[in-house]
Length: 127
Image (cartoon, rainbow, N blue to C red; front, side, top):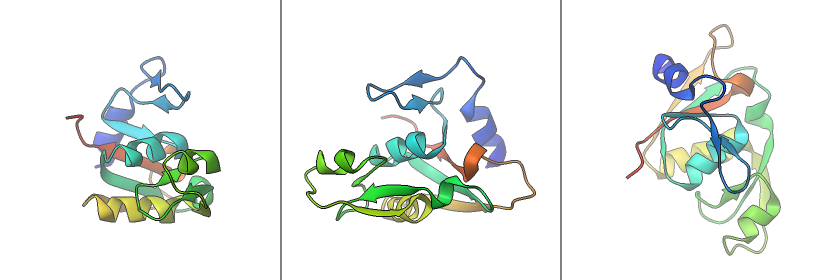
């Protein structure tokens, strides 16, 4: 799975950005809180990668009532129709999304090269 992640993340210059300015991978993987949250909202998580000792898993994100209601900013969730977003550690919120969407989750040991910051995902193909 880590090989698929590394291949999917691609090389510098292959990335694009969403309208909100979130950097995305070439299409097969996402890395970092904004990109993984964006993929989770699109129900594209195939495997969530959480690395032990990374700083991103504890970074706060904002959540709504449903697993897919999450955002990097409070207003992201308000724009989805949830008036009172709550903060949660990114790994916890993304794990809820992964479970709700039937995705796998993989704990990456700290000694193994994994996603920068400690959060990444191998993505489902766009339909």
